[in-house]
Length: 115
Length: 114
Image (cartoon, rainbow over all chains, first blue to last red):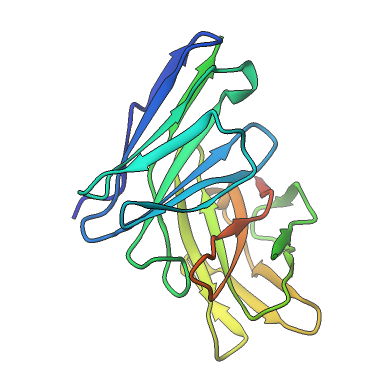
């Protein structure tokens, strides 16, 4: 069974551009979480999608947005890129509508570099 | 709202020595607790979890953690570490809520010296 897949693995953008990151959850999982892992800042919660809807959002500006498609894959869009957006972006999937009692499965991440 | 604090950003230990990585949480409701490990250039994988029942939880790779409700702690321990345990370790908490999300600590980098 395929795990959580993220693409691209690396992305280089210039300041002011837009970035689109993609995540495919494990088959049968309906929830997708996005996290930002910036150097020295640990994991910061970005967004949670379940059954196609945004369920919760972290403390990030509106230029961070996303969506979940009918097949439960998800996109994270970052507009008007800033240098401090450079980070590893991790996607996690879960089978229920929240991480109540089973583990989340993580992808390998997309390394976004803004120059 | 819940939060997680990992008191040590880095923990250096010698190979075959014991290690404890500290985690404290705060929450006004019952919590579920997790430890995840991130090896270099990889995503996160679950080490162990506490949902209910026995407060001593055993995980993969010889790690264990103890849930202490009175001290609001969930410290991770291993009696004898190996070079391959070099990684970043994240404590995480969530609550039973339809709007819940998993909150991660800032991480502890475990470095093993030969």
